[in-house]
Length: 149
Ligand SMILES: [Zn+2]
Image (cartoon, rainbow, N blue to C red):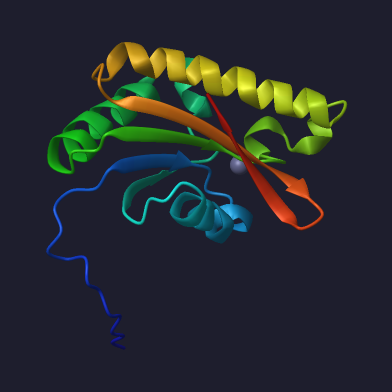
């Protein structure tokens, strides 16, 4: 079969942002809406991996490859200015919310790991590439996204 989708982006060469987020399908559309409407980025390179960039903490080949791709593709070709580390609530990479004693423990862990991943990546990525962090958590209306300074 063939299927045609309109696309006005093919002549663009640069975008301001790269994102790494978890593969979890439950968060795909809301994550995208947060990036587009919450942060105001229509165009971004998207890296998606189980647990987002949590695996960077293992200091293994994942970190090496991720850094290489950010530098060569997102920075080198697409000229990104920022990298967003995006975590989500109830992440299977952490065994889900049930692995935590309560919501504040879960929130604390995500914030700790985001900062630790940022610190590792900051040493290896260009100095003028800003690394920003955010995570989502459930509220009665849906998901609330929180950025961390
Ligand atoms: Zn996840």
